[in-house]
Structure formats: C-alpha cells, structure tokens
Amino acid sequence: MSDPVHPAAGTPSDQAPAEQPESFDDLMDRLAAEQQDEDDPASGTDAEEGLEADGRPEPPLRGDEAATLDGFLAFLRATVLVKTAGLTDEQGARPVLGTLTTVTGLLRHLADVERYWFRAVVGGVPESEVGYRWMDVSENPDRDAEFRLEDGASVEEARTDYREACEGSLAQRAQRDLHEEVRGTGEPRTLRWVLTHMIEETARHVGHLDVLTELIDGRTGE
Image (tube, rainbow, N blue to C red; front, side, top):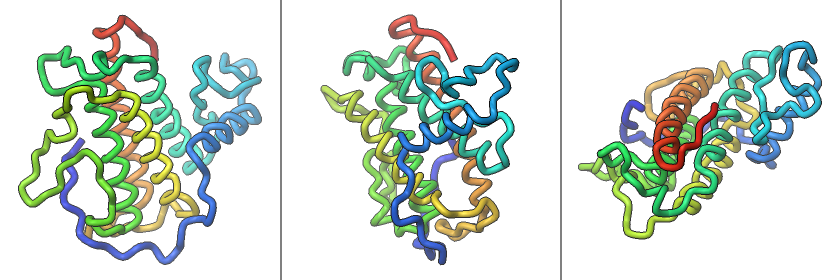
C-alpha cells in the first residue's frame, strides 16, 4: 500500500449515506443471490448457491461496473477472514518471514486502511474523528505501528476489528455513485478510483496471507 498521508479535514458529500446501510454479511448474501440469478450452469460455478465452498460470495459474472467492483471487493474482504480463521494467537503473531509482517499485524493494517480510505477520503471525516485503532497518525508517525504486536495480541480481536471496519466502509459506500468525486484528503478522486485501489490493496495483502498461513499451518487454496 502507498502509505496514507495525513488526511486533511474535508467536506462530506452532500449526499448522505443511507439511513440503514447494508451490512457486510447482508452484502455477501445479496451478492450470492445475484450470482445465483446470473450464473450459467455450464460455466462451472455453483449456480445453486452463488458461493465458494467456504461461503465467500462470488462476484457477479454479468454485473454492471458498480456490482463488479463491489463484488470483487466483497470477495477479497471475505477471503481475508477465511484465510485467518482458526489461527491461535501465537500463530497470528508468529513472524515467519523474519520481518514484522504477521497475520495479526496484516489484519490490523487492513482495518485501518479501510478507515482511512472510506472514512477520511470518501466520508471526509476529520482525522481526529476517523477512529484509527492501530496506525500511528501522529506528526512523526511510526509507520510500522500496527505490526508491533504486544504480548498476547489477539488474532480474533483483530479479525473482529477488521469486520467492523468493513462495515463502516459499506456505510460510507452506500448510495454513492462511482462518478462521485471525494475530497477528504484535499486531493479529488472518484469513488471508482477508491474502490479499484481497495481491490488492489486488499488483494496484495491476501497474497501475503497466502504465504504466511501456508508457512504457519500448511493451508493452501485461493
């Protein structure tokens, strides 16, 4: 990820998020239902369920641009949770690469990345109100702060926090058009750009989780 710059206080979009934004679990269920409607049984996908065997929602095969971007990001967010399920705290904190990179550290990093891009950038929330939990956004930040784990760091706590951060992202995403310009950092960009970047960012770290979890307990798979 390109390190987040300190977001300047921006102006929230004139279009407010929906009063009851779609939850992370509801989004996964909806995408699965849409996939069921759109899948061709001859394509080799699970047309009856619209889900991977492990419950991840398949992105729609013939969705429009917004459904495709949202679908791939939902799939990758779910993959983060699938990849990290069942690990002990010791495994989550194990530095198998000889660096600070760990499963728990990546979960913490991804949670605050969600907060940065969707609360600070998309939502225009002032930095003091974004609610970063793990990253150091002080004047002279420690850019590895989320990877410096305390003794007994909980991998399940980090998984729960990641899920909650994704819920917040969905609330900011709700009812916004892909063409909408967001200016939370003072540098305008479209919501389309943010979604595309988050697909790239999350996929990159899913790749890291692939390597870490295979080295930790031998698990493999997409």
